[in-house]
Image (cartoon, rainbow, N blue to C red; front, side, top):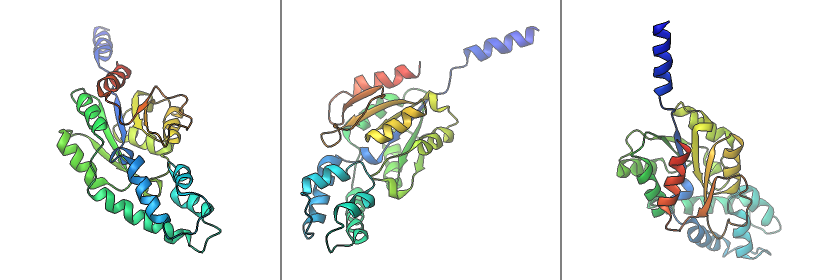
Length: 232
């Protein structure tokens, strides 16, 4: 009986495991301007009835091929070639990419805690490894997602897999992401969600997220405090 009571006391004292999951792809560079430049360049030689700016606003945060196929269907350009050019340029841009300062600052404030961390990326594993090294996050893990989802959304399966990697319940995890659909997928799993958006995405529906802010704002302290409060 005494042994059972002691076990119960020890269990009570054991702190619940918490996870911090970062959508690294959207954090690697200021995608508002970088993607705008990439798409404008790709559209230079295409006779597309839709304006470049409107195209960009539609494709941003969506699966590139699906949107491109629909928007340039009346042109002589093949969607697969158009998307291939965009993919090639993205790979080139990411080769020298670094995390947005705000995201790095948030991570630096979260890592001294005992939260388990996973970086989710679809094409930048080498950069994720460098980020982990630079931030001293030796125990952080990397989840390589399907490449086709880079400009789309991470669905609930991706977030669930990330939580499973660190053996933490999704309800004890906080996801940091940008696209509204990715955020809602995390919300549906019962995850705490921090959405850092920008001018090209702020029109999307972010209802249900725990924190909504601008990717470029100097609010790392506020966001980190919010994330850590979920772990208490």
